[in-house]
Length: 181
Image (cartoon, rainbow, N blue to C red; front, side):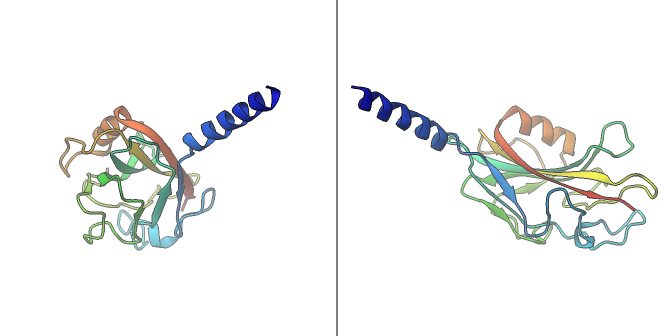
């Protein structure tokens, strides 16, 4: 009897662990806690980067995921509300990656939509903090969503995309990098 109880307890612990896999986000272009490369820095507003959207790969999405969204946010921007650098939504549930340079080049997963950044355009807008500020933090987050599509156009600003994303989030994973000038 004791052996059966131990076996059931072990099975339930390992079963719970497997059922609750942790979502992860990785990138060959970004290293969490490190400085963003010039390739991902904006090329305007006085910044001279290449403005190339980074590669992002995710895994461990929870059961019931119907789509994904990616959002890039700078909470340190001196605006009172941060700065939205990128939003991609309606990424199909069978996708697990966005390639380097996918923004604006039709390389995003089929059906994905890029929202408007705080620079005023749709697509990726890299880091470009004010000269002399302490390095800013750039949060790259992938969200597993409970809906197939968000009812938003490509002109939707980051805050609006964020509202819909958060209302439908099942899980998320992030990479945070810094950049200053």
